[in-house]
Length: 188
Image (tube, helix red, strand yellow):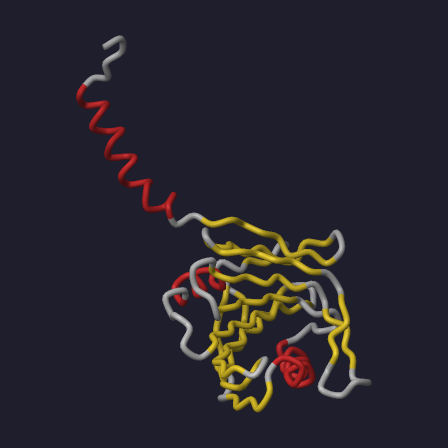
C-alpha cells in the first residue's frame, strides 16, 4: 500500500460519510421561478422527479369562446408514480391571498369538473402566510383528489401550487411533495 491513513483519521472520515450520506441521497435540485428576468421564488424539486416548464399560454375553457391567459407553469411528476402531478404558478395580476381565491374560482372549471371543495385553512410556508384548500373532482374523465396551496409572496405576488392525485395513485410521493412545498422561499 502506497498511502495509509492513520486509524483515527479513517474512522473520522467513515463517520463523516455516514452522517452526510442521508443528506446527499435526499438532495434535490433547486429551481427559480421567474417572471421575465425577475426571480420570484425558489423551490427544491426532489431527485427522481421530472420538471417541465412552460411560458405564457392560452387555456381553453368549457365554452369554446372562453379562453384565459395562463402564466408560466412549473409542472412536476414523480418518475416512479404515475397519476401524481404538482403544478406551481405565480399568476399575473394576483397579489393577495383573497385575489388568489378569486383566480382559483375563475380558473377552476378549466382544470377540474364537478369539484367539491372543503373550507380553506391557514398555513405558513417559509415564514409567509398561506391558505390551503382540498377537494375532489374529475379531470380528463378520471376521479381526482387535489390540494391547492396559495402562498403570499413579497412585493404583491402570490405563488399557487396545485397537487393532483388520480384515483388509485400511489401516495408514497406525499413526503416528497410536502418537502417540496415547504422548500418554497421568496427571492428578495
